[in-house]
Length: 237
Image (cartoon, rainbow, N blue to C red; front, side, top):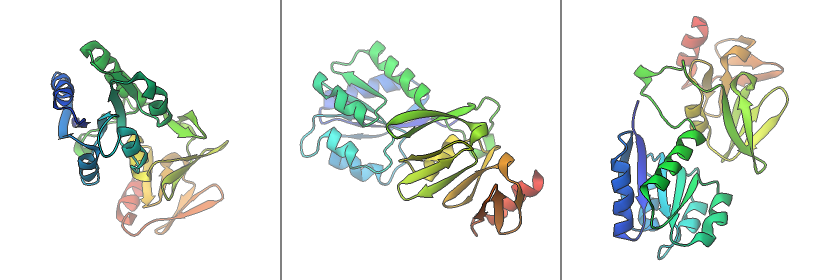
């Protein structure tokens, strides 16, 4: 199981040190970047995989809120600030939690618990993958709601720009996230990415050949870069 990659963004050195100290007590977390401004953080987040960002709201040049609004597919975010009035605005941006300075360690741990329950963020390396204890559902944000979707109900997932379209027998949900992030949340023994824009449920495949997969009335092309892996898995089923 690899560590959870964190970035701390705060213009106050002492505030960064406190978060870093708290994270240092949790062995599953790794601090990969510590930034004094949103501008600096923007450069890092565009080049480095970040799972969780601890983000101060009140910073010069670019506030944490404005920074968050301008990131495509942001990581999970825990906001930090000395000003309580920003809480509502932060939660409208779908942050995990809101920590009011000065941050006490016990309150910090509550935010970490929320983080762990908000998404299956713990990831393992491919050679160690196991899904014996994988969740039977995922949470999908769409239409300003959180939908609890059973894994057994998912037929296929398609990429549409900055959104994904998740299809079940009873509904179609449009959620703002990348198909790559969605792929990470799904158990690999039940779902397979067959194209850069398509993930399908293995148990819903009705027929297939070297270039195409059929589910219901839909046919999906198998991408050239995925064909070898797809063929291996399907022929093993």
